[in-house]
Image 1 (tube, helix red, strand yellow):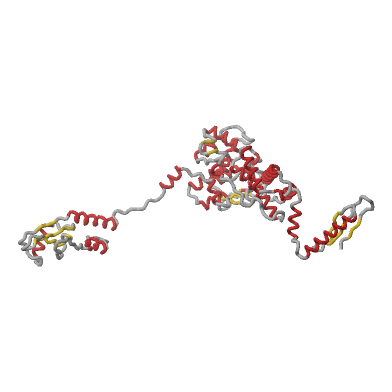
Image 2 (cartoon, rainbow, N blue to C red):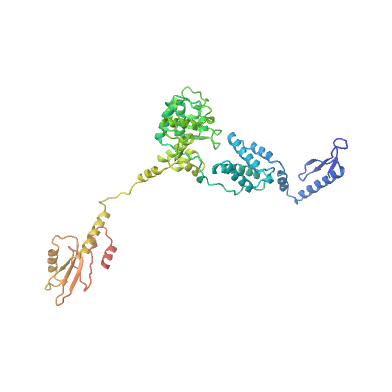
Length: 481
């Protein structure tokens, strides 16, 4: 039973209601200065408690209803507190995008969130601010992450942006990057080392070392800026470097193998540097694209051309991954070295042109052909047989020739018409005694015996043994023609 009382006496002091909720916990709620209205409110609270206890009101639905009345800014602040694993820069950028959408759509509570209204405001932003498809998707992804968090924490029943269509970034590329060749990277390093000037507080030698590490390891700018002598293990087998989880993009510790030439360079570079001292302090805060652009221009290499720009990320990480594949690394190996979770992301960093494709085709091993093989001899024998058959040399004998059973006469005919005992096929024709018709006695190798004749048709039975490797079916084909 709810109780009503005043904490302090006075006409204008409100009544206080105490009651026990459906979880058995004592609750206190502020009433009105009027006792009758306060009693009605207490009765309502008791009735709702009774309905929740009997299951007629779902407590979770009641929770969703109460969450939707809270200002959306409070939800965003609580959302920010849960982003501890992400980098500070990433969280700040994501929250700025969420708040921009909230302001543009004039959302006040979670009930106001509407997916179509968000996409309409982003399309308007795309026109007014001339943002690209990738930036559009980043805004949509930021608010989608916020809505998913609201669903997970039981603030929303479902994500209003579920199924929202992302734009195709391939048709609207604003900053296409290109990979440098090995020769261009060498010129970039030489240009920096010989410049004699400082750019973004780094000397020419420091910039040359930064470019070398970026190319030979594929590390990102922030990861290179976090390196200390303790990051390298040059005496291990194989030599490795370790990127701490706090500095890695995917928030995991990474261990990468080192190039043998880089190991020798590092033995010199690390001399005199304290174990915890950074090799390139505050590199993540510098405009590295300015460094690369000036050093490339000094080397006579355009910073931007029809293939894209060659900023720090492109000249280092993009070139590293591309050269891995150009020089025999498999796609799974390149994926692991690039520390990508998806091989499709690795493919975005791969710049394979027509020259690379032509080189790959040229390296394709051609099938070996042994011209002394039995199959080659077989082809020659078949051609010889077919040529002789097409020539159809018809050897006519006199009408007074000996009967066919006379083996001596047959041998004389063969010697006369094939004195060299060649293997070519001939057609032996005899004129039948008492008739003007010519009888075809067979198509056969000149050295073999003459077969029986068939009147008015050409018949032959090749000796298959004379053709190395030729099957009996081929002889049957000859016989049927």
